[in-house]
Image 1 (cartoon, rainbow, N blue to C red):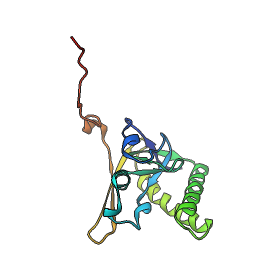
Image 2 (image 1 turned 90 degrees about the vertical axis):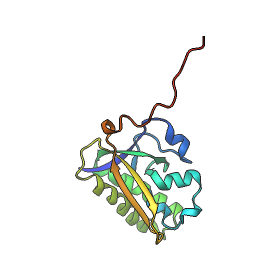
Image 3 (image 1 turned 45 degrees about the vertical axis):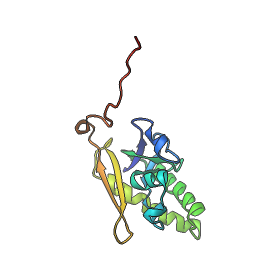
Length: 162
């Protein structure tokens, strides 16, 4: 059985930082392919956030900051490939659905390879940037919740009025 990422939310921040947030538990992959024809200065706030830290949900085609490794059946993997193929065909100018499917399989294989030797429920985040030659550099890292002390620092407290 293969493994792939599923979107996960620890809070509602994805709703605020991305133009469209992925729903919980969608299959997810790298979204780097969406930015291969862009330059850094072309990206605005929420689009830049998707470039920097987004994983692409394969149902809503929204973005998630975190992905959790999960087992995926062969049937679900084929469904995910076809959903992505249709998305690529309709939005990125693939000449035909078979070419889009070939590209979709390649994109999904990249993420399944990332997850292959990693335990289920491992949480990943991604960081992307443009290199000096304009190529996209992408680095996935495991998020260790215990070492992080949680995801967010406490920034306020509620105090009752006198």
